[in-house]
Amino acid sequence: MTTDGHGRRPPRMADLAKAVGVSTMTVSRAFRGKAGINPETRARILRKAEELGYVFDATAASLRQSRSGFVAVTVPSINNANFAETVRQLSGELSQNGLQILLANTEYDPLEEERLIGELLRRKPEAIVLTVGQYTRRTRQILRATAIPVIEIWDLPAEPIQHVIGFSNAKCTGRLVDHLVAQGCRGIAFVGGDSPHDPRGGQRREGFIAAMRRHGLDGSALVPTGPAPVGMAEGADALDRLLALRPTVQAVVCVSDLVAFGLLSACQRRGIAVPGQLAVAGFGNYDIARICVPRLTTTDAHAGRIGSMAAGLILRLLKGEAPETPVRFDVGAELILRESTR
Image (cartoon, rainbow, N blue to C red; front, top):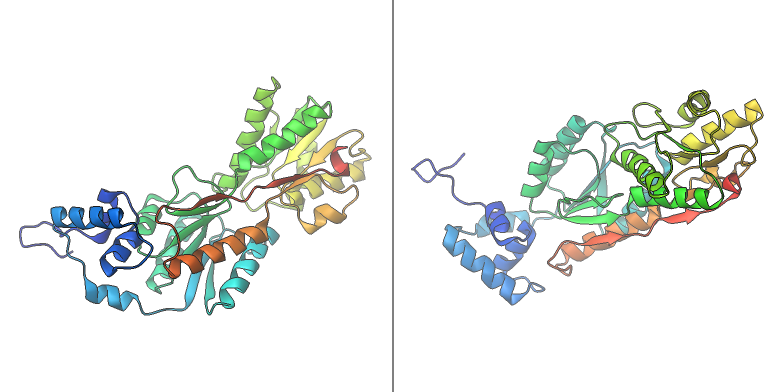
């Protein structure tokens, strides 16, 4: 590490950005005289730079302007149709504007995610899009220090890195519980969401518990499915455990449509009428939820819209047209009511 001869490290752009309370991109734009930055913000940055003794490295900044032509993207599973739709839409719109994506599959592993993000950033992407995960401390440090746009998707984290495009997984499950209670269900269970490395599944589970408490109901009927990713087989296997835990259960909310379909299929094999004896709901609005019998009540997270909005934001950021403050956009996940809960 370079020091000033007295063992002290010269201030970096990330230090200046933190001191002013803006992104490193905003600091860079201020020094390069880019349009779209508030004059007062630029003045604050320059004053703080003088106070800290920060010197803008114009040569390094110039080198950073050479375009790599790609955007880095991470997903926890390439087998998930929702994530695939997000990537398809993101890739298509970026491609129309001369940018390609470099995709990394983290397999719900925070350490692998940390390694992959480091590898991606070494290749100098124009921006990085992250499916929100359980980041390691080192991952957060790396992402906060980078000067490129960081867009987190598929969640609304309480402490975002920069920009966020997603929805509240907890609220989505809460709306499902509200619907089931309105249908007269009181004994409701939740299947899945127990994997420590799947924040979205965990948030759906917590949303279920909170909604049940809000209605004055017992929210302790929680059936685990094991490490993410989980699918139809885990859903089918969960039925026996569900009935052993709550023999009089009236409805079940599943962490995903795949889990719900597996559980629905197990019900059909055992002669359990859905929704007559057991109402079943999922999450994701997968194709299978629209064509199975009965069709599944679910939540549509608008996967394609997430990818499209991420692409649009990246293009605006690279053109210097985006607002100075980080974007936080809720795509508005939608409750889809079908025959499996009616």
